[in-house]
Image (tube, rainbow, N blue to C red):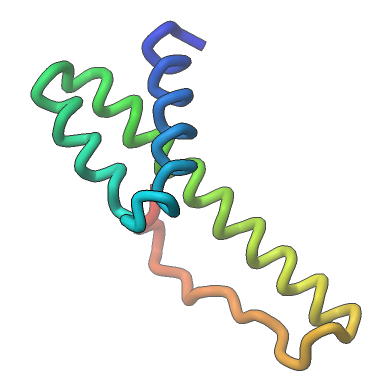
Length: 89
């Protein structure tokens, strides 16, 4: 992993961890604007890290809900989103 990627990933982790305290679940977008003014390359790496982390979070939540449904802990099994034909990243 390059220095840019490592720094961007650490910043993404810190920003996402701070969002609950800031009460702003889109704070990463503000940080991205600051980064764009300083370094578009770094901003791109940061946004990629944020998106990957958010996707992992959603996938993990889906997994936990599916397991809870299988174990009878909840009544309703989660539904996967409709395939949007590759519109994600």
